[in-house]
Image (tube, rainbow, N blue to C red; front, side, top):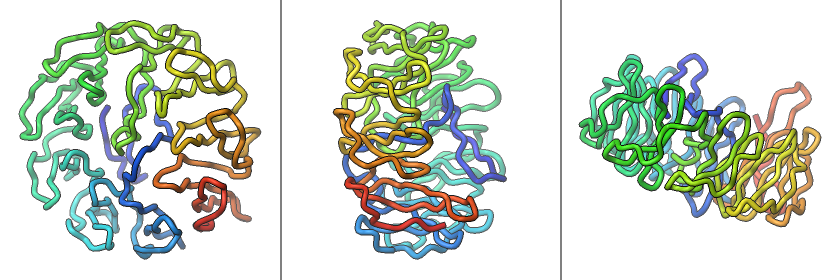
Length: 344
């Protein structure tokens, strides 16, 4: 659910139920058409043609959302616009991407929210927070989680052990090690009964269209339920990911494939690793090398990379190892052609 700031690693840590998925599905332009690059250890941005539009100068950055991007210099984070100009100067110990007009920021180990002018609209007071989705955010002080509105007022009092954001009117919450779903009044619409839920909250935060049915786990198997809690795909997989572009990745044994919403297998389990479909393509891994397939399961970009991310705004980030075994990252188009060659 909840976002915390690992200051030493300078990374976001998301309290997802089954870990953080590296890949997400995409639709229309979400990141102002700009992509993060690293050159000589500094971070900047390129456009869709591979042209550097914001020179590498930052120690790190998150993708653009709602026209602004988090960047950090030294120990402080702030926000730049698409011209690379600071609109909110570095001043926060942590600064998350914007969602619904507000962004979570951290000051002296407490989290609150600012608007796009940098004004504190919710004073830092929480130990952990999610982003705002459907006008509510999950927050915690101590061990229990509740939900606040955009004024900082509790609309659902802290009572849950963990929680994710609202997804079309329902939010996953955990009580006594079981997961269920509540509505915006805090009433359980699907009683706690699942051992785990697979939901890529970070990808969803970035505007990716993950939706119901929801992947859930009972015992050793995963299936999918609809908003009423009814199984639409019975538990049968060793792991399951969310639906995007009409398909979901599932794992049987040691291999991954794709199903459609009825549970029909559309691409048989054959891949060692897999991501979401975006722009009609999905990253897959075979024998330690990553490439891309289309929705028929045909390989359209041969496995040749050490890592392949999902397509966003027409480009996919890929990584290869350099001679000193460190990783270099660049971007390819849907034909697998480099638009920006790997750098580090």
